[in-house]
Image (tube, rainbow, N blue to C red; front, side, top):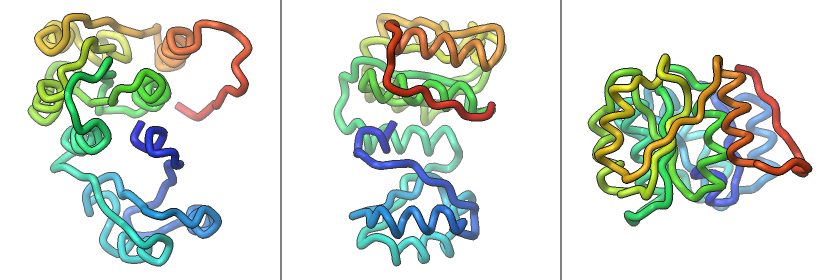
Length: 192
């Protein structure tokens, strides 16, 4: 969501290296700035140092865990409250969040992470700050349970769910809700 709003791509590194394909793309792009997503536990200081050769500005958005990192990214991307929507997905597996990131970017809201049965404190604080008009849960009650759904109702007047029988059907449900008409210019496909 942050990359889409800033008009840039999201590229991948390992904790300790910049893969050659990523390095070549950074050299081609010549970005004005690079934002690292995650703590030094997932993108190490060696990679951060090497990234400085590709852009004059390198910064980091991170929290103590993936939930706090998602909240930090949201806070940096949406500095004021009153967003139209916040999307919520499990932080324990990536497919629902991956499929939902496009929906969130198009709708002008962040994507935050929860567990099946809890709303981590960083997520709760960010939802309270954002004051979304609505919250959309991504995934079935098997990944974001009904207890979490009930608790989310205290953060927005409207809470709905986009889900299917599995991660593929959930991605299709997210797509159908985000692109209700046929004839889109492109569809992207990734592994789940």
